[in-house]
Amino acid sequence: MTELGSDTLPSVGQWQQILTAPPVWQVEVQTASWTSAALALRDQGGRLLGLWGEAGHENAFFYIHALGLGSTGYLWITLTVQSSEGQFPSLADIFPAASRMERALYDLTGIRAAGNADTRPWLRHQCWPAGIFPLREGQLDDRSFGMDGDADYPFQLIDSVDVHQIPVGPVHAGTIEPGHFRFSCIGEQILRLEERLGYTHKGVERLFQDRDVFAGARLAGRISGDTTAGYAWAYCMAVESIARCAIPPRAAALRAVCLERERMANHLGDLAALGNDAGFAFCQSQFLFIKESLLRENREIFGHRYLMDCIIPGGVAFDLNSAQTASIRSNSESWQRTVQRLDLLLQEHSGLRDRLVGTGKIVPPRAAALGMAGLAGRASGQAWDLRVQFPHAPYQNLDVSMQLSPEGDVAARWQLRFLEFYESLRLQTRLLMELPGGAVSTTIPESIPDGEGLGIVEAWRGEVFVALSVENARIKRCHPHDPSWVLWPVLEEAVLNDIVADFPLINKSFNLSYSGHDL
Image (cartoon, rainbow, N blue to C red; front, side):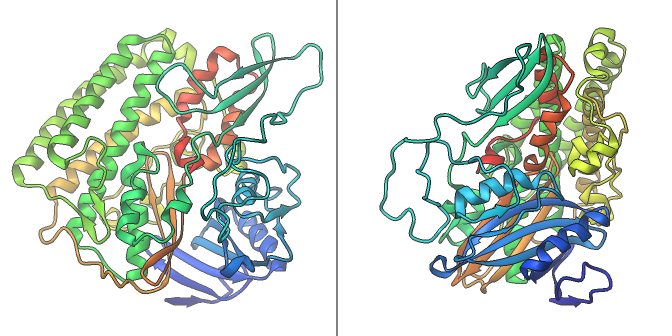
């Protein structure tokens, strides 16, 4: 563990480096330094990725954690709050995305963010009573709860006789996850969109507690089914950092193959759905055919359509032989030719372009202020990709090409999916051609030492991270975090002044996670 002086990081305490690739720095701060650390991060052009809470021994105190990104790396800042205080300074005025995270933190721990004007429950629907906080010690032991309370969620209204509301969801037409969208409109024009999420809250963070780290890996890969490889790798990275374990080069390369295949599958699915929402069924059928071919190949070669349980602590649970790598490369070349033909055809389709161009726009300065990242951020000019700026094995040897657009509309998010699909195909080919020899895993001891670790990867939506605390070889606390936490509020702004009929297109162009957000 390396110590770093205050000359390169915010002067709020003694920083320690707990991970080198990507670089993660950790510090414990006093209450007075909590806000100043956030201000320093923002003023240096940084952004907030996540904020979460943790109960201390017998709920006598609580840890409040924040993870940000600065020029030096990822900054993990921890504040201790005594139970008698019951609150900590809100960061919502500094980083807008913090507001919902602070509301969720209160629902789960009972510690309030002082200064956050929005105190409505976020994750607590009719699931448990007010005054019960599931992540506190002893609050859920041998107890069952009714379905009382929170039936009348106070949505924000525009006070005008000319404005009408359109409620959509949480149950939607189609096999999709639940979320409520409340539109305030004049005619078809959207003046305000307010989301309400949390319907898929499953108590995942509580489920992690007291499991061994190997059982935790299985749960991590099921947090959000479309991001199995992303969550599993981030979780395993956290475990391996605590165990002081380096995985074999072949294992790192095979993990990257899984991650890039997951990226390709999701981009193909989104291109299909966007085409369908624009009334272009031909587009949907073509892209879904390729996606299904990829998923079937996953099942045949990797053992699972969505690559579940392929990434494990210490490495991977599979290997590839020469015949399998040749088959993957051959099929991928065929898919690339087909997608390139579709790309060219769709670029010239005036009806499709009319629906996509200029719709759901977030300009680069606003994207920076909102802390956007991932594909949606890069489509709004935010030049950040973990695989490029802070690459970990094996990406430091792959020369990843970052795809960018300054336009920030649905058309930009559409086109970047093509470009990232091509880049993932290129990366997969290079990984398979240069696949190192040797073992595909190393042993993680069952008696893993006590400690804290963090893993973070550039998944297909953006950075997924997992913060992990282990005590007596069991999981004490695990917080998985999806980039959708930051991007869901952006969607509310992206639809403004567009029409209701364009919402499905705009929503799908972000394609954010419900399950990964709700936990």
